[in-house]
Image (cartoon, rainbow over all chains, first blue to last red):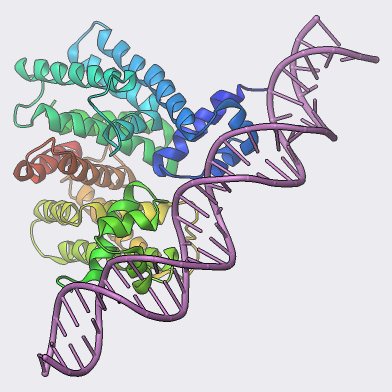
Length: 185
Length: 185
DNA sequence: GATTAATTTCTCGTTTGTGTGACATTTTAA
DNA sequence: TTAAAATGTCACACAAACGAGAAATTAATC
């Protein structure tokens, strides 16, 4: 195979399922330029494809974000890198949330993806509280709102990119401007 | 009927289709507390239901936003009211975008929804440019980004509300803080 | 309470999506 | 050049979603 078909299917599935959870496998296969039969060779059924998507997301996205947080340096700079990492993950970051907050998601079950998400979420909140204590960001906002806002800005950047409304290079710059000012930096 | 069934179905459909475009009509009917048969009595098929959703959205959302822009007053205050109007429209505002930016949407066709969206979009951009010229908001950002950012903040407020992460009353306050600062007010 | 309208229930045929097997074709690598 | 691996094609069984008719039930109006 020229490029990893399995990976291509997963990437396509993430993109499609992100804005249409119950899109047909036919559509996924089509956009990934394979037959549905081929898709089924790699993934037994819908559930398995979804699981592969989760795993992929967790791997790329969660790791990138954790790495940014682990990276030592000026806290504000760290936060900036965090935003860029999330934007680089693009639609995967958005889907990470959706999966975790979808109706049929069981937060109690021993679920790797769930655990990864929760861990990231906790770290993020702690980080925010830390920045607030140091008076780097405003205390007028709750850490939870800032978390939501962070996701919102990432989504904005991703969708602005996909619609082509804003030049690629300005994207991150704008996102950081709006996010940092928006939390009182 | 206790409350307008047709309207209830439309509202439910908007909420459901917003996070799952191809959700079954069964699910919509169920959440609207009617039988699928009743749904079909009001809407011949999926297309017709979608059209009704579009129309409803256009009516409520577009009008509210236009009203906010028509409202005379201090530009910054006007912008604030605009944000609140969009948040009040809630999930409808988000769906307005999705419908307009979905793949099978034909921007060229003589489509009322499309025209309404475009008109609102144009007015918003003009308004932003105007504010930039008056040096009320920063010129570092493009009007298009600010438009995307606006939508992003609205989405953030709506989703933060639905997940219950942030207290209802603080929602708009936080949203305005983050948005206004984020565009350099 | 009778009348009318709205809704449900049950049913049916049709369409669309899903999962799989058998086999042909293409691509990759030895 | 050829064997193996990957992908495509066709066909099938099955489930789910769809759209609609007819009768029964419930709610609203007078």
